[in-house]
Image 1 (tube, rainbow, N blue to C red):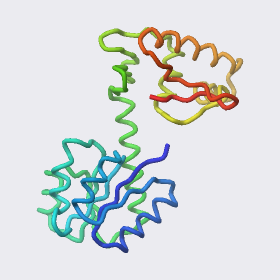
Image 2 (cartoon, rainbow, N blue to C red):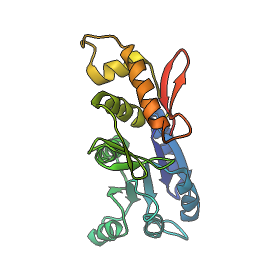
Image 3 (tube, one colour):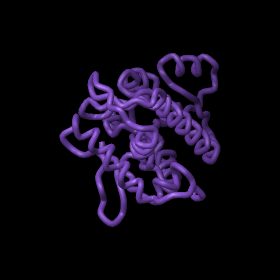
Length: 224
């Protein structure tokens, strides 16, 4: 999965440093040099936001306060301030963490990864709403369409869970088999094809378009 990160700071050198670093690490990086530009870039739906506090015009606290009701991703403040009250104010407006300048870029990278791992665990536990009224409740292992529960076997749900948690990625039937049961499990990976056929049949009673697509010669992809 390619994570999207929004870096907001009025210091161009810092923005370029962070952009280069996170792109090397495989992130898709969006940048903004002021608060107004940051508000526009939020439409890219970043997975995490690095937000400087001291910016001309719209400051970091105000940006956070204005976007927090619309985004649930972690927001980490970048600041040269070290006063306790500033940290309290940042948390009160919806920030999740503080990075004090000057900072170790490797430590920053580790903190970012820790927040993203925490978000992944939350996604597994929480109810996830997809398009066309399809809801997957991972904790209760239920799939709903509006008010109707779609009955899946344990293996069918395991496959649906795995693919839906890796939206857009393509997996061969062999790799799905390995991810679910491990390399040393006896059996034939072709059984994945039959399970996916049955999942499609069950979801097809409610959805007008297949959400598990076959990429011929490669494998399967969750498209919602």
